[in-house]
Amino acid sequence: MSHLLVFDIGGTQIKYGIVSDTGEVRHAEVQNTCAADGGPALLERLRFLAQPLIKQYQPIGIAISSLGLIEPLRGTVLGAAEAVPDYPGIALIPAFETAFGLPTTAENDVNCVALAEGWTGAAQGVGDYLAIAIGTGIGGGIVLGGRLHRGHRAAAGEWGYMKIGGQVWESQASMSGLVRLSEAATGEAELNGKIIFARLDVGDALMQKVVAEWLDLLAMGIANLIYAFNPEKIVLGGGIAGRGEVFLKAIRNAVDQQLLPDFKTMTELVLATAGNHAGMLGAVRNWLMTHRGA
Image (cartoon, rainbow, N blue to C red):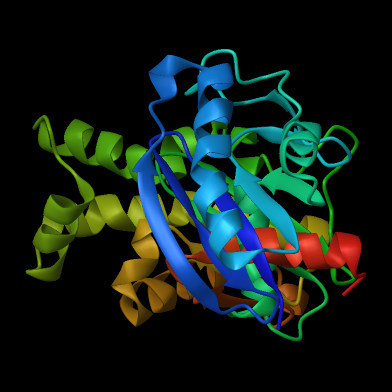
């Protein structure tokens, strides 16, 4: 069994540790990203954090999952990383390979989550699937023929920016969109998902109406993705997945209403199961596919 040093770099936290080539998390830690310090400082912190783990575990390589659009050959941050000033333009792969002499890969964080779902999660054994992350926005990863589809400039899967009914999809159908819809309907401020679903669960009629509207908006976009990609599965992740079968049944019904008859049974909607270390696991999977072809 071999081990990899893994970083999952987010806008607020860095998850990092040691993961085996069979997907076993052997060591895991969390640090604040300290995003305001900027990209060069972040890179120095990562290299500092790497040193003791490399000494202790002697990994065979370094696997990175990161926010932003990541060009895979050099791991260059192309953009969409506004949370960390001066991060775009940094080439992660040569920075680590030069420092440690270990083969390194870097990939977008949501793409890594998609790979994790195919390796250890809800899409195991599936060749064509999408992973949709529903949070403050909506993003995702595309796997076709068992391979990650990045697009021409590593920007595939940014479907939150699609327009539906003249509105940006994620502005309506993300969790942030649900909060906005709820605040507009109730006239209240500072609502959040916990409050909204607590009211829904006790039968609040207004919240039932709002959540039904939100589910329809979410379902419209998912139906469009089914028409575009014809995936075998769509894996739904993000905080909303914590509602389990209640959410899954509701969104399946809503999507079913949006699809033409021939498409209703083509794609199975499932909840993400790769867990809290999905970004790290997906980074390892990306490394293995890059350096071992498996």
